[in-house]
Image (cartoon, rainbow, N blue to C red):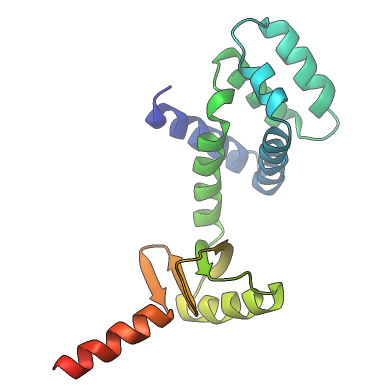
Length: 177
């Protein structure tokens, strides 16, 4: 399925939930469905299978999620079944999340470190960056063995490089001048 079309699904869901003033609950629902699909790959295969009937897929989905998610989210998920879009749920989720974050003035970024930092340290970094960016910053931590020490933060279109490699390169550059 075309990525542009999938982004339209995310945008349509966002616009609908914005219009019906349930953006936060829809975001929570989408996060729940994503974690369900990631934790249960067989369920994702079931929902994406061309062999299984649409009615069986809808029945199973409704049975599992009817008490967990908003009715509007469930309706959207049933449309995804009909359009055979569950294979690409992650792209739709990303599209919706991007619009959600924009709407709520949230910047998502990634912090690469040689080892995982305690959540307290991540919270401090998020707080400092939030003040600097004048938006709420949320970081996902990624363990990168190529970084010997320090951290590299990718936030929007910016890179904050506090790695040892960067420091060494800066010293080399200043010595060659």
